[in-house]
Image 1 (cartoon, rainbow, N blue to C red):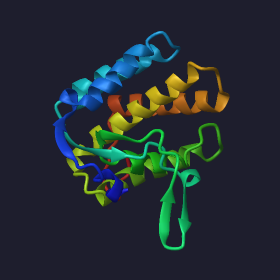
Image 2 (image 1 turned 90 degrees about the vertical axis):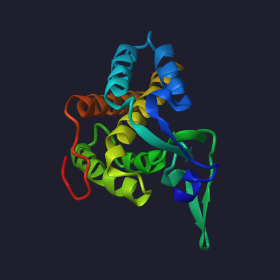
Image 3 (image 1 turned 60 degrees about the vertical axis):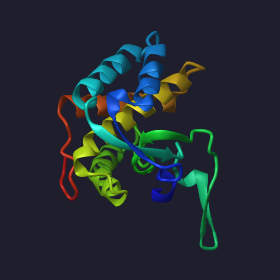
Image 4 (image 1 turned 180 degrees about the vertical axis):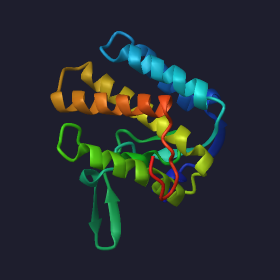
Length: 189
């Protein structure tokens, strides 16, 4: 993940002034007529108010870093399905995405898995040298990015599992913006 994050170089940008934020907020605006569109717009506004002035390190991400998109060939990690890859995103998105895949909303262990995710976020971000002061903004922008992606996918037709996942991600973002999780290594939110 570290190698990929730095593959096309990195840059430090104020979130609200970045091309990433312009793209993401534009995606949110396009979804204004969907069932969750107003919630997405409200969350985007809150992210901008709370984190818009935050300087983040932007780099490259795979966009769907999960066990289903990788495998080992001897000692070489092979990663495929690069259609979601992009540059200019906050470093750490792949790590958070990988950790978030363990949470399956609607399953019996979802609450425990969510707590584990919240415990894991600062550890994985520190492993990628993301400064602790940037963890909350990285987490919030990741959640907004993914909620927007999922809601956009749902405009092509309903899918119950994706509906549950989108609602969970958006609720997690709203909780984080209302009562920020204490994202600190070894600490509990």
